[in-house]
Each structure stands twice: as structure tokens, then as C-alpha cells.
Amino acid sequence: MIGIVDHRMGNLLSVFNAFEYMGADVELCADPRDLDDADKIVLPGVGAFPDCMKNLKELGFQEVLNRLVLEEKRPVLGICLGMQVMAEWGEEFGEHEGLGWIPGRVVRIKPEDPGLKVPHVGWNNIRYSPDSPLLKGLPQSPDFYFVHSFHMECTDPGHVDAWCDYGGKVTAAVRRGNIFATQFHPEKSQDFGLKIIENFLSWH
Amino acid sequence: MLSKRVIVCLDVRDGKTTKGIKFKGNVDIGDPVDMARIYYEAGCDELVFYDITASHEKRGIMIDVVRRVAETIFIPFSVGGGISSVEDMRDVLLAGAEKISVNSAAVKNPKIITEGAEAFGNQCVVLGMDVKKVEKSEKIPSGYEIVINGGRTYMGIDALWWAQEGERLGAGEICLNSIDADGTKEGYELELTALISENVNIPVIASGGGGIPQHLADVLKEGKADAALIASMVHYGTYTIPEIKEHLKSQGVPVRDQLQ
Image 1: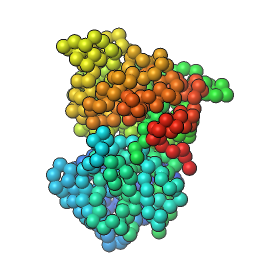
Image 2 (image 1 turned 120 degrees about the horizontal axis):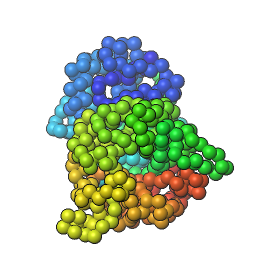
Image 3 (image 1 turned 90 degrees about the horizontal axis):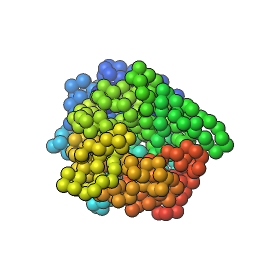
Image 4 (image 1 turned 90 degrees about the vertical axis):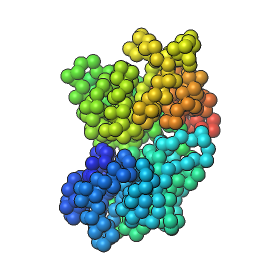
């Protein structure tokens, strides 16, 4: 079973629909204990960093996720804000501690070209490392759908799996062992996004 | 690089597309979900469903359309028309839409923008604006005024002020419809679009007037729009999405590449 963390951070239906469309046995997990049965975990999220961390703590997800992801090494896919909270720190609405799975900070995007707007909304092409299990089988520079104002700056560049150019380098995907995450929305990125979901489902 | 978006708008009444839409080959398709699928596969970047269902009792049909679209179409789509409360927004978003758009309801009750943004996030709330060109005055310094009821009622609100106010209240995007250009097929209102786009920090979708692919190139370059809305130029089979995108590419407009 694929367990989607339902931490009350936005609408999870499109994530659910995309996984179901790819043939996965997928469940929304509103109770952290439901995640125990999940072979793989999806951590989505739309909204603000501090709200998301607060919900993860108060609903009891943080402890369970730390055990399943860090100790038991279950594969996890973070999406958008779900990726950002995997960092050590976030700067949205002040300094806030994240899950700390990926060394780095989540900072506001500052495009060098003042004509570029923040939030970064729309389809942006990315570049990715050729050995990325999540992005294998995709063309060289595929487009994905982004909606965000912050992005992750990784301490170890080896954790950056994909990046895009938006008036400077913006982190588009990260990976550390069993931990995968995308800043963009695979569930809204047509065939390329579905391919990423397929890659995550088949990874072991 | 961020692509410029080509967005297809479908008018829906009682769960059916309103006009006998003819694709090349003269196939009539009345089901908005089937039509959405055709545009999706052709590479459109986003979809807008505009619900013009008159009776309140039949609005549930639209929710069903949204649910069916969300199950098989994996690009962002928004729903507008008849949304006047946070509850209306919730119904549509929980059925799987990415965004909702509010137009006259926001003019009458601006708080709805903030309430929607706080409940669902700024990225969910698109502010639709219907605009007409008027004489510049103290009240309307930009020379563009907000109208409702399809352009019949002037609201005494300056369009530039309203766009900035909408952003401040929490809108995540603006869909800017020129009533003067709408239906003319003679091109988008470039001056208006550039004015708004240069003075807000959220994406602006240009609407009204698109007739040929060059019109999209004009509004995405000169008009500085982030996206262009199209309807009849593809609904009647005059152009296909790949033809439009091919032209945009030839004009140096970055567009999302075709599928795998």
C-alpha cells in the first residue's frame, strides 16, 4: 500500500488520483498509525512551512515518519511543501525547524532578473543528474508544473537531483537514499509527472 | 526557463459545453470531459471551465464534471462562474480542481479573496477581472474600469487599482478579460495587459480577442502576459494547440514542449 500523509495541508485528491491512475493501491492516512502498513509514503503539502511542521508534530506524524523513513528506510516522496519540510530549516515566516532529513535550508527564491515574478508559477523545464532513479526515462529537459515562493538550498550538492533556471538555479528535486522529493507537482505535470510516479512506485 | 502558458477555456452549462463545438473532421462533442481530454492530449498547458449554469439546483452537475476531469487529466485546471462563497470554492476544490476563479463576487465582496486564500492558499484563488476602456478621470486614472454583467454595469473601480488590491487581498493569479477585445478575434488588449502585468507581482492571464496564433505571441511578448486564454480559435478547429505552440516557438516565446 502507498500511504499519503494527510496532515491537513491542502487538497490531496489530485495526488491520490495520479497514484491511483498509475495503478497503485493508495490510501490517505489521516492517522499516523495507518502509515505502518505503507510500503511507500508520499508527503505532499500546500501552504506555509511553519503550519505544516506544526501539523506534522501535533498530529503525531513527525515521530512516526522519523521511525519509518530514517530507521526502517521506507521510500518516501515529498512534493512541493512536503519536500521543503524535509530540510533542516525553513525561513518562511521566521526561522523554523524542519524534519531535518536533508541537510539544508529553505529560502525565498530571488530571481536575478527583476522582471521574474515570485511566486514561481507555471511550467518550467528542468535539468537532472543522469543517475537519478526518479527521473530516468525522461527527455533531457522536461517541463514540470511549479507553484512556490521558496526552495531548498542543499548543504551537500550531491543531494540535488534536479534543478531549473528561474533567474538563477532553483532546486527542483532532491534525493538522499530512500528519501525522494520534488519541488514541482508530478501529479499536475501530465505524462512526465506520471512517469516520475511510476519510477517511484517501481523503485526498490 | 518558465514557459508561457496556453490555456483553453470551455463554457459549460448544465454539464454540457454550450456551443456545438466542431473539431477538424466535423465531430460534435458536447461532453466537457471528452473535450478537455482532447486538448490535454494536444498539449494545452491548463484548462478553465466556466460554469454558466443558471439554476442553482443544477450546479451539482458541474461538481461531477470536475470530479471526472480530475480522475484522468493531470494538468492544472480552474473553475469559474457562479462561485460566491468559500463553501462554493470548497466544493469545487475538493472535487479536484486546482484553482477557482472569482469575478463579480469579488467586486461585490472583496473579503472572499482573502477568505479563499486563507482557507486554501493563494495559489488556489484566481481573480477574474472584466475590464473596459474609458476616459481617464480622477476616479479611473488608468483609463480602464471594472465592469460586471458582461460589461453592462460599470462599477466605478479603476482596473489597475483593483488588480493591485486583489493581489494584496491574497489572489494568486489574475485572469484579465478585455470586454472591448472579447469576441473580436482582432487581438488581445496589449496596452491594458502590459499595464496590469508590469504593476503586479502575480501571474497575469490575458483573455479576450485571440483569433490567430500571432495574437498570442503579441500578448505574451509585448503585453507581458504570463499566459493566454483561448476558446473559439481552437473550438471551431481553426487552429490546433500544436500549431499555436509551433508558431509561438518560432516567435521566440518559450512554450512547454510536446509530449514524450
